[in-house]
Length: 134
Image 1: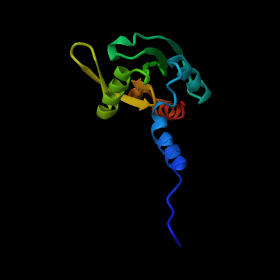
Image 2: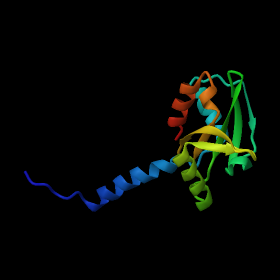
Image 3: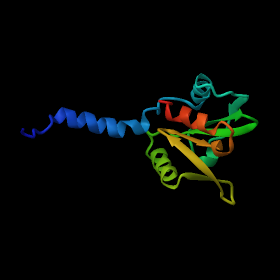
Image 4: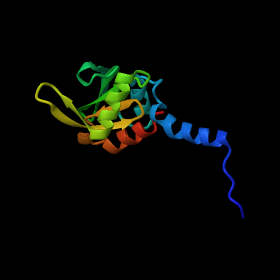
């Protein structure tokens, strides 16, 4: 049995699959994540716009579930600065708010960062919805 080299197009396709997944939801908006949560069976009490500036994101929404808010932040990976900021958040697993640098755990999938899910009763449902938000 001989080992053959795979065709070049197959290698390119594998690399595209490996690196393309990081931004597979870059075309989506935070409001769409709210709809995705509902489709995944997560009960939403309310939602509204959220200032993305404290985390230097492109856009954001606040979603209330079980009386607690989560923040959903979108980073546009087409912009180098946004892509680098997202890499920093992935590396540390957290974000910092305010002058005192209040630390919060961050959950990341593609271009989206969710903050506040760790204290929510539906944490695992939220994270499952995040992982399937493409």
